[in-house]
Length: 304
Picture 1 (tube, rainbow, N blue to C red):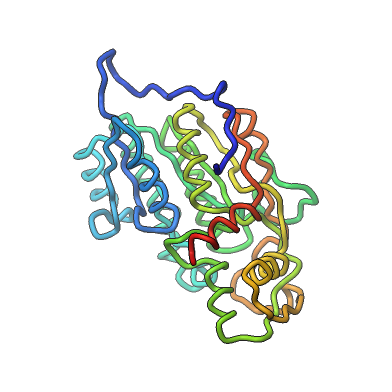
Picture 2 (spheres, helix red, strand yellow; picture 1 turned 45 degrees about the horizontal axis):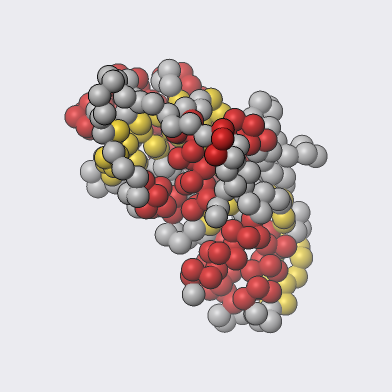
């Protein structure tokens, strides 16, 4: 079991336009990415659903006319936007690309969604906050992005809200999954040929398993939730603690040295604390996300 669900609070979101049974059409951008793959895997198990994959080869979300034509042709009930430019450091030098994908793309998708009466689900990031809070961030806290990646993602959020009437924005954090590059895979790769590593100890957040996030998203959709929600696994850790846990559970004898983020030179500035408060998710749906340690153990077992 992934997220814990109180079934007494769970109701199916009714998207039928008439009293007759209809097939719900869900269009997914970024379907081959880490999260998109898990969402599609989950939705394929559902009945009375038609999943429309929109990979970059078929839909360039940075081209307004292409987005409008593609969405009007398929007339989806729901659009899940998983497409994003997520290389935080490269966004600092490839600013135009970051803006087009993370800010303009959501704008075009939102406008097209409104045009065909679709609801849009948009994935955002914990990095929209500056990390100065001493507590986990709630949805209404003041945003203050520090990097180009974060600024473009926040602009994307604003465009979703400005250009579509029916939306769900989900902020999440520190994703790991089976279908893309992530911190866990990187640590395991390094463990194959390194005896000693230095990992930052003053960046705190919550590792989140994409399989768990996909399930939570689907429940939010079925409940008809709208607005902004924070969704991550439970608990928090530093990147140093995360790496130590990975190596210990896998039996690697690697010396991990704690360092400050100021000692680790990188192009982008990232928040020191980006832990998200997910109480709104629990209150609205009955979901309580499992601890990140439990999710990581399942991930590692499946990776073997």
